[in-house]
Image 1: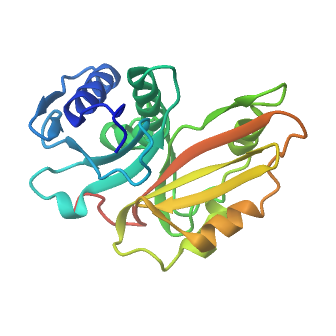
Image 2: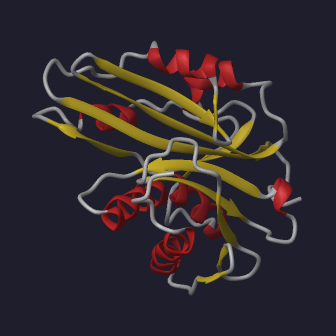
Image 3: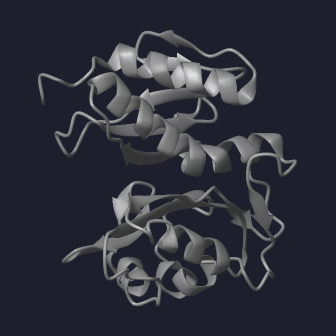
Length: 234
């Protein structure tokens, strides 16, 4: 672990602060948890990169029953100080993954969009919440991939590769991170925090922009809530 990495209690405090602002309801740190209203909580997963700006966030809907109510994801930030870097990672998580999770709680479209199980832009057979799409890069076309992702829903393309690979029938988190710059190209799908090879290959094969100069990357998150007619919290 890097000596520049912030202590977990500091990171949890930063997460609690941003969630408090987003929800307009207080979060606070208690031990190894950030506790929110009701049964909500956040824990930190074990870092798998060693990068001081990388955080693994477990969002727990029911702290008394974490096993089947936890949605896990990770994010990496950038900046000139550890605080700035981690703060940016939290912002990226909150703008994509977090927006879908907060919409699951709000159910009013204020944080993210809903797609029914039969929506042609959705995931066949599942009700999904589509989190925000964040983009970054350099050069004149740095937003190209983000704009493409906003205009070209990923769910129907990824569904055939993902269907049948889930270990539960509700609350499946699917993160997409993709883009290119110079001689480097990335296309990654993670399901509940775990790399999914087949879906990543599908993402790599889609015709998103590859700018000739500079770099352009995008990240988004799909929350597969439940099968048609199933209760998301049952």
